[in-house]
Length: 253
Image (cartoon, rainbow, N blue to C red; front, side):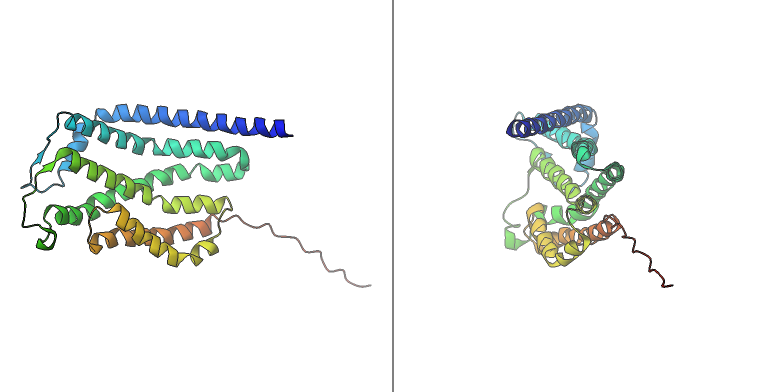
């Protein structure tokens, strides 16, 4: 029995290694492909910077390193559906055929919610955040020095912020998946709404680079809204209990 259990564990570890290798290959391919679009991504991100603040670089390798970082983040984002697919394939042997059929449509949801998070970060969150950071009030020493922003610092901030906001927007998909697998119930999730509000503001403080509560609230409110969507999706995807047929009452003679 111990030998059989050991072989089973080793089989799982080999399967995890194989899936991780597939994910690394996919990220490598998408990252290389992203290099061809790096310039357009740069121009897209730089358009959010104020026109009166030039972007410079001060280190010999900064520009090349920033290009690689942008391509890597884009590669991870493009490979995210494939990574989720590999996770589903790893869990597939433990699921029924019907449960597997419900998991595959989640790949489309993963892509759509991630894109929604990136769009929210670019159009809603970045303008006030950059305005606060590049034109801080006198309370934060805005009248002491003039900003000269390096391209590496600026691009890294934007790409990291947009990427993690996109990841946070996957909360409803994660809740749907956990509910479908029977790990959590919609009632349990709804009962934790107070903790979700606290966690939302904590994530808002960790994700946003600013210190002001306005930008943190801009992140926290959508997270609370996403949690509500996740509870609704968890209720829709909850496993249906099989009805037990009651014996028919026998009529007397």
